[in-house]
Image (cartoon, rainbow, N blue to C red; front, side, top):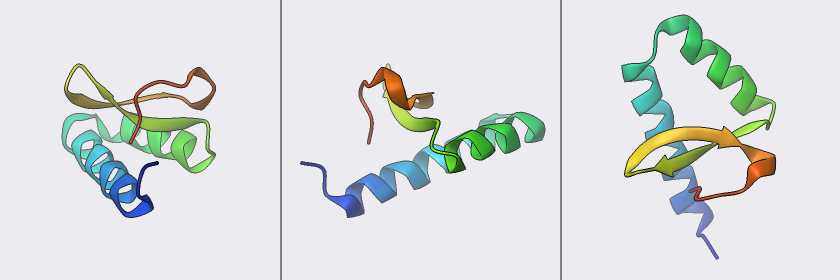
Length: 60
């Protein structure tokens, strides 16, 4: 089971990475979907990204 502290740090890192790499309007839209619980941070090919909650996968 993932330690909630580790999961929180993973999400924080994914958010920081997104803020640094996405245009502002895309970042805001991504955060809105995250806050609605529709997407979650994922580690994709060694990089932070986002995926639909219903799809499962490698998340923090």
